[in-house]
Length: 81
Image (cartoon, rainbow, N blue to C red):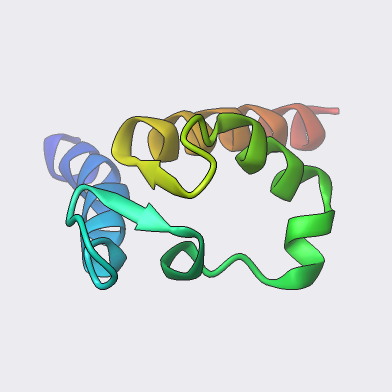
């Protein structure tokens, strides 16, 4: 159980740091680093990400994790009916 939890918590962090900092500050993802496709940007998920982006040009780790939390809650709602 502990190993699965470590993997679940470590994956979002490693994905964030894999892409952050390529265009400046390593603690932020630029819109390009986040690489949300055009279709996704126009979807509800893209609008949610835009709402979470307080600086309007970069997403920090806290905004990224908040997005993942809300996205997981939406998926749970959809899947649980």
